[in-house]
Length: 535
Image 1 (cartoon, rainbow, N blue to C red):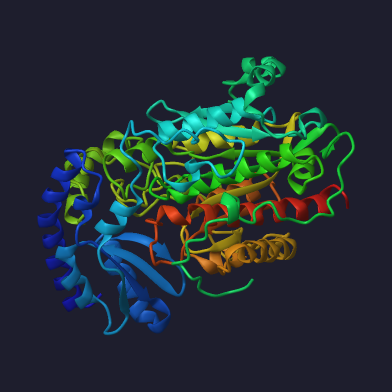
Image 2 (cartoon, rainbow, N blue to C red; image 1 turned 90 degrees about the vertical axis):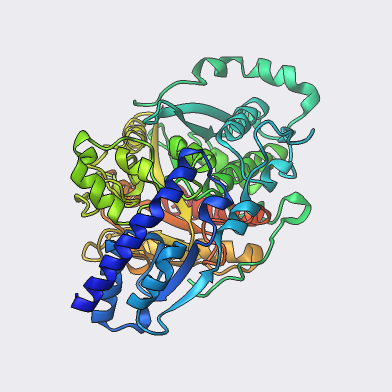
């Protein structure tokens, strides 16, 4: 680093320290909304246009200033820059190396906010017999998500809601498990027959809260609204040649095959939970309405489990205190609260001084126990990986679930959904020096997934190996699933969009994102069926 760069960084650190009190006050007052981020911009730095030395300098500056990295690929880096730092950061970048992708976060935050707590969702919000429910037209707070889960279990005999584990603050991490038996297919949901449905499912109530063990490259057209036709889109379309399995119904040696979908690791990525709920809702609506549908065949062949919000504490915090919050809410070890660490973190320009004193939170997607490495970041950084693998209670809970299905179910596919970038990636994420033995099959399936996603609303998704397509840290969820648990079909998905809105996707794109997720995951299930059951 040159002397000039060091001097500019010192000025930047001073400006960052001066900027933090305002943000700290807003967070302390519980202001998660637009005013807390007024003037913040997202810049795209074109790393591909820089030489090796320039790339190193840019990454050093971003790291030293602890800028909020929204997206990191070998080609480009999206960073959020607060107003006071904008002229200084611009001076650190080579001329012409960046463009302003989002000029002000505040209007996008305002546009994506859910209705105020206690607001009525409308008379049809909890009629889940159709995807036309207005629930899928907005983002929701955790209590509304949990009610949706309860209603889904109540209205569909194929669905079981269960507790995966507990968060750092004691909230339940819920899962939704869908499995279709012959007697549960056909007829859809009849609201007038609610009592008889509940009566038929009386035995299910006792296990409701049971704990378990414990491609095509290209940029999409981000502005497309993408409402599905008739509120349903095209997600019910899928390969029609999956035969209806005979007993043991997609099982091997009596062990059911399970597809596990996890999302919500990063609190601010609201489209993940929304799309996961849309996916499982679309499956059970289609499966129970038509005994011969692709969805019905899928749910006889596999148990499909969705964990919509692995990080409930962070998700609540992103609604109530800081919209751009990323980590969980688990306090770092006592050493993290030393004066030296506080001073370092404050000078690095983090948003809220009150939060720096606590050094709260672990990046869940850097805390899994495969090739985990200690982070060079401060515990106050958004990228803090924890003091050791599985320090985060939430990652440990899901790992326990994966490990505890032996004898009953075998997780044959794991998909970890994030935003943004429109990518579908297979392991490994931590390094390209380690290559999966199943790479050819994983790539073939991935290309089919992104093609199915693209066919929904003409949005381009890209398939490939995670280490090639993104700059990820060790301790990634898919690396653990594949490398430690031998889950062959392990993928990480980055949903909409490619940067026009970033984490602040407008609500009118929720259904389109859900259509894409549903089509892609249905294709993946069909591909696995042909290779592991029919084959």
